[in-house]
Structures are given as C-alpha cells and as structure tokens.
Image (cartoon, rainbow over all chains, first blue to last red; front, top):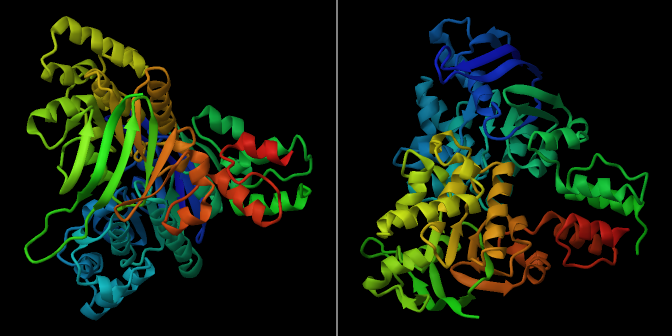
Length: 284
Length: 277
C-alpha cells in the first residue's frame, strides 16, 4: 500500500541552517494496518508524514502509494494521488473557514470535481462517521462548536474525500479526556469498519498501546523500530534512552514479575492488566 | 498561613448579541488559596476553568461576586498591574508567549515593564533562568528551543517579576512527554523549594497526584474539592462528568470490582505493586 524507500530529507541543504531531518527510511505499510508513530518533537515524524502525500519532496529516495511513485508522476496527477492519502494536521480546526459545517465538509469533494449529489452524499456520510448528528449540526457555523466538535468537522472534511490512507498528526492534542476517547473511538471504528489504513502520530503510549497493530519509532531522523506493540514495548531501556516511555501498566507488569515470575509483560492496556492480574495474582 | 486568593460568590456570563441570554460560564463559586499551596483544577472543555483563570488575573471582571488577590480586588482598576505581577500566568501555547529574539531579553521583558533598575533586572533574569535550569541558553534564540524549553523560558519571564503565585493554564497540552516532564519538574520545584503558590489547570490527571488539593469543575460550578486521594478514588463520579483518573487508580478500581481487596486511592505504580505483592 505504502512503501517508503531510502527516504532522505535535508532542510536548507548547503546553507548554515542545513538539517538532516530524515535518514534513509525504509518502511512498507500494508493495506488495512493501524500504525502508531511515536518519537519526541524534532525526531522527524512530521517531516515523514508530509512526504506521504507529496507535500514535501525528498532529497533522495521515494514513496510509492498503491504502486505509483509519488515523485515520478506528472505534477498534475498528484492531485488524484493526494486524495488517496488524507492528512489531518495538528489542530485541524484552525483550517475551518466556511459559513456552515456542511459547506466546509463539502469543500474537499467539490474540489475533486464530483457531481453535486455525490458531494452531498459524501459530506453527510463523513459527518456521521465522526459521530456527529448530521441534522443538528449541518447548518451551524463551525465556529460556534466546542473544540472537540470542531476537530471532528475538520476530520470529516478529509474523510469526505474518501482516502484509502488516513494520517492524523496528534488528533487529540488539547482535548479533554472525553473528547480524546470520542475521537480515538471514531478513528478505531473507521479502521475496523471501513478497513482504512490509519497512521496515527501520538505522544500517548497508552493510546498507542490500546489502538494500533504496528508502532513506528523515530529518533533524530532515523527509524528505530517498526514492529508490533508487543515487540516495541519490550525495549523499555532503548525507548527511555531516546526520551520515550511505555504505558504505565507495562511498567507495573515488569515490577510484578519479581513476585509472579509467570506474569506476562506484553500488557499495554488497563483492561489487559486487569485480566492478567486476575489470572496470576491470588485474591488477597 | 496567609491567604493569597479569595474567590467569593463569583459568577461570570460572557456577553452576547442582543436578545440571547447566555448560560453563565461560572455560577456562584467560592474558594480560597493559601500561600504556598499547590492547587490543581480539572474539568472538561467548557467547564469554566479558563474563564476562572482569566478572572484571577483581571483579564476579565466578575459579572457578580469578587476575586481578591493578595487583598486586592480585581474590580479596582488601580490594582490591575499589581495583581498581574502578584499572580503571573503561563498559557498553553509556548509560541504565543515569547516576545524577544534572545532568551534573556525575553525574561527581562516583564521586570523592564515594571520599571525595575537595570542591575536588579540582571540579577532577576539570571536567578530566574537558573531556577528553570535554562541558564546555558540565555543567549540562544527562542525559536531554536524545544516546546518544553520555551515553556520554561515563559515561566522564567514570570519569575523575574517576583510573583507570589503562578497560574498555569494547561501548560503541557502542546508538549511531548519529555517536555511535559521538564515543565512538571519545574512546577514542582517552584512549589517545594521556592514556596511558590501554584494553580495548575490541566487535562492530565497524572500531573496532579502530588497536588495539595484538587478542585473539580463542571458546568461552571465546583463539584468536588479535596486531596488527590479523596478526588481520584471517586472514579465513577469523575467519569460521569467526562474526566479520567490516573491509570493505576482506574486499575485499582477495576480490580476491586473483581474482588481484590486493595486500597481504592492508589495513585502510583509503586503503590499498586505494593498492594499486589
């Protein structure tokens, strides 16, 4: 689905501000995967995802989407390719601009040159996919909504283009716990029901542990791991050395292991921890 | 202990276009903060937290009731500058708070505006940068710093005005885990070593496990108040108003349901490990 081959990116090359942001990245992401991207600020996460729909051109290497090399196609075909890979930036609600929610969500599909009926059908579907009630929200101004609602409208705008791959850059930043759970729940649903390939940039190891089936770890422009949560979260020392951590429950399991040698360590969610403790620890 | 903040029967309603009546953002709330306390404020988006922080700093004025900071009422215009100097604020976005092109100039901006003498400013800037562990960066440009470092510079800028109290309005919301840790360590240090009064508004429950007191807000009202163990052990009540509890507290709650006899107010990994071994 998505192949990243020998991707290198150097900002301001041959200037005093030269910065090597991506170093020989090679990843193949299969269709239908849910990938968590982690790494601290400046590790190259955002530079990487901006290559996946050709917003940035690589210094060398390339990205292949569905068999098409993004950087060898005619520039005018990029428009179609970008519809395949939907990118939701950080704080996407800052990009809302129309008078009504409905018009805002229609903007993307309208630019694709679709028929009016198709545009409206897609906008309605996309709004409903994000868990908002279409009838009550469609005529409201996006600017009178709550933060969590605005963000969902912005995500609906990308979904209305029906991308095969959805990339979200920290979609829960600044939201309260309920808003966080709602957005993540909807993303999980899109992945399960629409079989969308999802790439999620997140700072929360708890969220990543709960949702994804692959984790991609970046550090100083390099790919450190690309593997299942079980394999990646086993590397506690290596993750800590690059300023990351594992979910709290994973730390707990490791501590408990001293008393209960057969307790599993590949536990990343509170629910899984509950079951494992139930299995191993005798009721006090 | 002296009282630094008194909030008495405070209500605030945002002004609206004619004809419409807005719901009050804050509805008759009262509480006090003593000098040296670390008070956490939680509540979902729209519960009134940020409105409260703006009222504490006289950015907006009460519709009814009073806010008194270090014995000064925010309603009296002649108090405003002293109040803002006494209760400094740090906001969410690190990029919106820095004004100068060099770190130390930025930290000096506050005391300069207060008319502090140059030698004294030098002393305060050095001291403030030392407190936030950023003295090595004093001649750097703010845009070269990480988010956590920028927030620490914003904190230093407040410290240089020598406030009694700092109000943090979601200072870690835009930071990565290491940036969050840096800022939380700085806040803890200010409270413990410098005896600074701290009001910390956040969506991350784990940042408040060491607070002296937590105020829980919902729909413009204070719905709970107590120490972290008292508050977080009420898992169901917090979830009902859209909030979370620290992961270990939640796990403890679930294990209790399964018949484990462990304390309901567990906050940390070590406490949980201790209860299970």
